[in-house]
Image 1 (cartoon, one colour):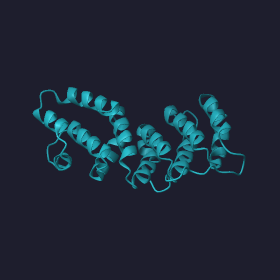
Image 2 (image 1 turned 90 degrees about the horizontal axis):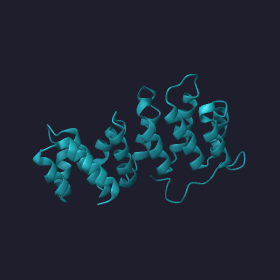
Image 3 (image 1 turned 90 degrees about the vertical axis):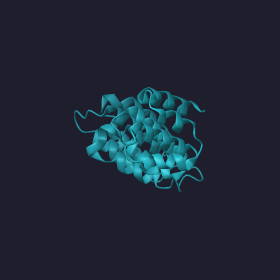
Image 4 (image 1 turned 180 degrees about the horizontal axis):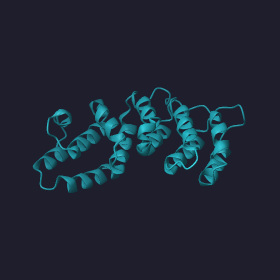
Length: 203
């Protein structure tokens, strides 16, 4: 059991209490049994999270829709586990979904994990989405500093020259300036664009 699954299992075990369904869902290796729990009426959220995570890490794309919903959940732990699972699922819809969630201004309070997932995926949607989100966070008194920092750091990681203007704007914001300086240092020369690693464009 990898560390992410171990952590999720222990958290879910605490939520499940004495529910016998927990041991059944945690122990089974049958993907159809796990998938059935995603759509079965009356299933608690912890059960859907557990089975979606297990399906995703096994490469079963039936987990996709459940994980996208969890990626934008109000509980940070659920968002983080969903992002981890989606990054390993390999579903080509993931980047588009993450970009849509990250740029949904009505849900910006929960955008941190979608932003981080976009950076990990290095998909074509990532840079435009992060630029959009960071630009919005440069408004006076914006309360979503962690999202802004994740965008600035991610744009440096992605190393795409299109991020230069918004990172230069971020220099004027004391809470973002240090991260923006580091990100700008990782960009190619003005007018250039770093090429994404092979095999990432189709995610």
